[in-house]
Amino acid sequence: MSYDISEAFATDRTGDVTPSELESGNVSRTQTRTSPISHGVGISFVLDDADDTGTNRLYRTLVDTWRDRDLGPGDEIELVENYAPDFLPGDDYVLLFSSSGWKAGMDRGHGWSQWYKYHLKLQRKSVDPVTGEVEYDTPPTSLSLTVEPQINGLTYEDGNEVHLPFGEGSRVSVQTTYCERGTKVVSRALRALTTAVGSDIVDAGELKRDSCRIWKAEAHVRFNIDHKHAVVRTLQKTEQLVDVAGGAEIETWKQRQAEGWLEARVESDRFDRLGFDPATTTRIEYGEEVETRYSEALKVYQSSDWHEKSRSEYAHHPKLEAYIGSQRGEASPHLDEWDDVMRRLRELVCSHLEWAGVPDSALIGDDYFKPDLQPGFQWEHPEGRREDLRAYYDRFESVIYGECLKAQTDAVYDILSVITEHNGATYDLLESTTGFSRSNLQYHVSRLKRAGLLTTVGNPCVITFDAGYLYELADEIVDEIGAVHFDESTVAARRMGREDRAREREEAREQRGEDSDDLEEDDELQEGSDEDRRPFVYLDQWGGTPQMLIDQLTDDESLRDERDIRVRELPGDPT
Image (cartoon, one colour):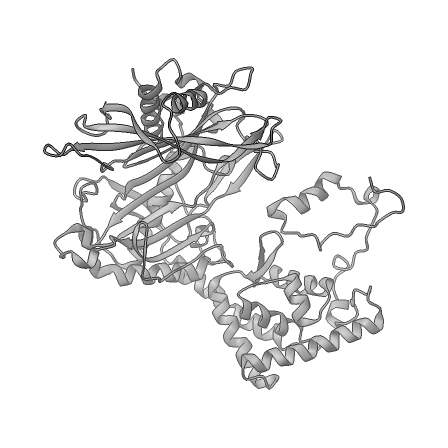
């Protein structure tokens, strides 16, 4: 039986990539390098095997198998012996069967009861010829599957219902390594499941196409350790240019991780700032296509015992790997987008090798990554983008000076000092530390957002600088202004001065009345446009819809929180 379902997911998209337009320029050149190799892959899908009674055929079969074998917590058995995967030589492999507690369950009238998920794991089996002791180890190309129920009526322990984005059925999550085609990952999973429980239980024709989602994808190269410092510094520079208050992170740790010795990591959904296409996927919501961003990441890491190995051993040398951030459900890319996802990851790896000055001759081969045998990879390299982008951010120096030194208000000086000290701030924090009202703060933040200096992320929103580099720039300027113009030469002095100004503002607002929006507190605030001071109107005069208001509070993209919308309480029972 063939499990190659490539034709079912065939696409006519060529996947050509050109740099997206940036504020700082649009310069690129066509470049060709050794292609990074695909590493870890994770794909999930749902089989439409639910019957009228809400029973999932695959999931129920695994439940019955567990009970028939009288297995308990921590047990692991060989469900398939002498398994011969088509991606590994020999047949000394087994599929181990185990179970673990799942996040959800159901109340059937006797209280909430937890359900379980079931696992199949490919292992190489060896038997000691003398003692007969059996040992298992993970083969070079791994494969593991997890099966979970998707049934209406499932809830979490707190009573909240489990969301089923792709309807009822048996949900399968598969992880494997070294697979260059996404459809081949699904084929590996279906073959293992069919061997374990039978073709009458697993029907490839029941696979729900929309449910096939990529939640893990990796591409990497191994390079000579002499270039490690240059690559780490390159990632640090990238982090400064794309970081937004936790939207990216860089760690120069020196600590042991599950994947080895991690040297540096940067994760972001804004690599398009460097000239790459944005990482987006589409989903259907209320009958319309909605575009969603997902994050990508780069990391430099080595084997945990690399320092004990000689330079002649490949494990002594580090890897540079690009991967997609962990996404689940509709927010993760569809299997149809496999080629686009992998192209983007290879672009990130190759461009950062270029920026770090690592030639193809410095790539190190291992059991799977063989530079001499890898195909060439051609892409549009964002030439000079990072230098242009840094120059673009440098222009904000005059903006920060001008805003902090305005004669009519010291609001921006206090706001930026709080943001730099706390690496981002909520409106609640700004209110408590500056003494300004919410409306006053929103006015200034909106102006600085329009200028490109600040941005807001999350819900409730956090006000941050638009890039990590701007934190360093703003901190230096605020320090200088504080020392020269406010006699606040230290952070402690700046905080004390800010506290004094905050008390004065709060007292002034109390004298005007605690319900006052203190719009008159700033001369400049009064000079705002009619757009900034437009009065509240009734819903029938607004022209919007109730759903639009709901979206403002529930949609992560709106960046609103509960303090941004007012509600008038009317007399009577609110129910």
